Length: 162
Image 1 (spheres, rainbow, N blue to C red):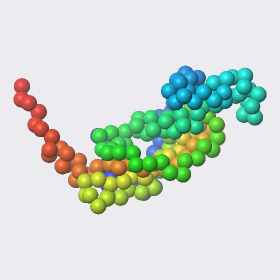
Image 2 (cartoon, rainbow, N blue to C red; image 1 turned 120 degrees about the vertical axis):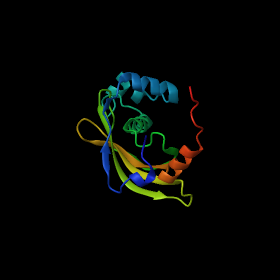
Image 3 (cartoon, helix red, strand yellow; image 1 turned 60 degrees about the vertical axis):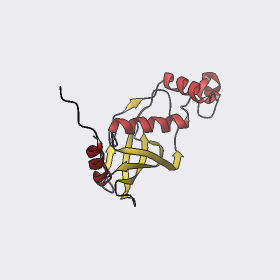
């Protein structure tokens, strides 16, 4: 089970497992998103560019952040809704073969006017194998409080006896 709002402490830092960005990731994301910019899809074009090679889509990096966040399990069963992304920055390119991990730092965790839920704000930093932060921004998540989870458990039906 994931954490409730009260379980997040201001300043806590955690890291996800790492994953390597592959050419398949970029090709699939290009197809799904419809973004076939040659910086992502044309090796010759990208080779002649100032960057010198193909790069991952910026929004693919953001998607990887959400996937790595899910792997951390902080909100397994406790998340209600994603509320937004603020101040997102694309700081450095992500290349095919880069291995990235997510570093999160809790910026805030407050119970709302409804005592069964609250909002957690985390600084999300996507870090590559060289410890370079390639993307960062704030993500806000609405999650249950301990009271909210207790209320949910009380309202669930009892399992049938065998």
